[in-house]
Amino acid sequence: MLKGSTLKALDVRILRPLIETSGGQQRSFSSSIHRSYITFNDFRKKHRWYTKKELVGYSMQDMYSVVSDVSNYHKFVPYVKRSDVHSHESGGFKADLIVGFPPLNEAYTSQVTLVPPSLVKSECHDGRLFNYLLNEWSFKPGLKDIPNSCVLDFKVSFEFKSLLHSNVANIFFDLICDQMENAFIQEVRRRSGPPSIRSHVLTSERS
Image (cartoon, rainbow, N blue to C red; front, top):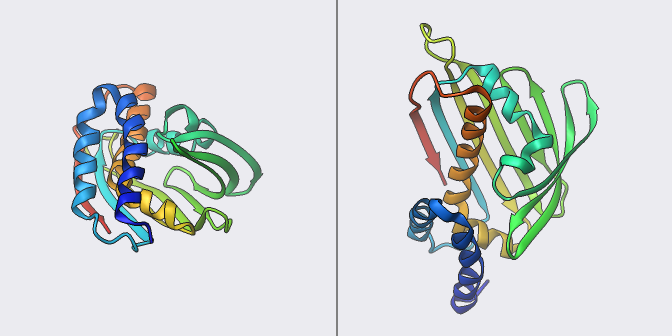
């Protein structure tokens, strides 16, 4: 178990470069970190999960095209430093990713399952970094009178093998989840233009 002084030093070491590189996003970083500290007590929590259902102003295909574009994750997904796709087969492929922020950078391999245009599911059981990792996006039709809309379900569930990684994840869990989802929406906007409607969060839960 990491001692309080060690955790504080780790916070400062990781938090400083994040805030320094966040620029105009510093307010969102601060608010997300604040929410994390509210649940900062239990550092033995290794399993974390997050789910969100949201109505967005983009079609299922718009969303699917971006989320399934794993080979380009390093260009627009926060903390993804490298993303290589290989071992293509019917219904999916494998992806080697390097993720992290100073001072942590780790590599792992995910099995990606595709069901166009309704599902992108990524699972990792490589036994080095995670006990398991699940990242799932599913898309369903949105409003009947607005074709360029859909309901997305975003799910993340993971458990690190390392206590160090677990503690860092507990600190930044809210921040990482919020930034990850927002990065995909912003990339869809870049490729497809402004949304047809304003997004509405239908449900949101996290551990």
